[in-house]
Length: 111
Image: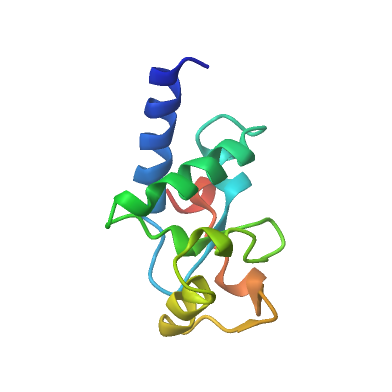
């Protein structure tokens, strides 16, 4: 992909991420699949890593396919991702979201 293609894809990722409801989470793969790029979960992760300059992108609500906080090292501080999720009522134990199936938000079904 050329740089402009990446930028365009990242913007699409950010638009979807902005729609994740408070207290819910989705996965990198679910966003990729929704955007018609099912094999691009890693690209969605890169987009989330680059979203810190965008205040309105709730990157903390995007986790891996089994509910692990795999992107937490991209947040300032040691536990910011977990703290943001917990402030929304999401229970996290040892970097694992509890009741993941119950709070999972699938853009393909919700949008």
